Amino acid sequence: MVRISGSNLATASPLMLAVLFLAASAAAQELTVQEVVARMVEAQQASRRQAQAYIAERQYKVYKDEERRANSEITAEISFLPPGEKRFAIKKSSGGMAENVVRKALEHESTMARHPGISSVTPDNYDFELTGTSACGDRLCYVLKLLPKRQTKDLIHGYAWVDAERFMVRRAEGRPAKNPSWWVREVTVRVEYDEVNGVWLQTASSATARIRLAGHYKMDSQHLSLRRAEVSAEADAAAAPPPRKRRVARGATGLATSVSFHNQP
Image (cartoon, rainbow, N blue to C red):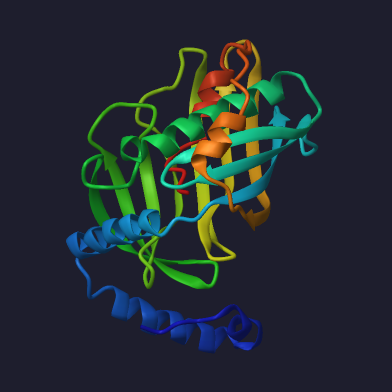
């Protein structure tokens, strides 16, 4: 397996870069779709077994009708406690409907963390086709076509990019297998993952939707920071206040839940 590091990319000539990727791609193609999926599932299980507590900060931006400047910006703090407990707190917000959409997205992400089997990229949820290999930044990835086995908003028709060395999903994108709400249409979602300080987590996401009577909306998220947390799940659960019920605008639920696809710890 040929490995290309970020430092190498900075100095490699375009010709050398092409040769290295072609060599890595040729080696990667030796695996079948069954072998890629089996190694991916094994890597996901190992990641969950080795998961550590952390506190991450994430920024959300909501755009309306193709505007370049965000209408709203929200900063959230996400706490993860293995094996599957996620909590969040809004640290900064411009208010309005966007904050409610972000809260709904984070609530759904917390649910998916407790029940990862619902949306995980595994043979329980998908049939797979291996379409080839592709670069993900400076990494070579297998590209799997995702064919959901159930019509549910928590699965997608789309593609997953699986790291050819680590066999973790680095990117997934597509459209929900089932429309999240009557109020939304033309929903698309993209989620990106990477290792940050030894923790594999979501680093970016983007969801777009056309909301009836409201127009086109896009919600992007970006990882800002991460620190390790030394706290027990029991202590955190005792200290956490109960979630407040909030009214969410029609259509907002669909945009919120669509971006929560396959969130890993």
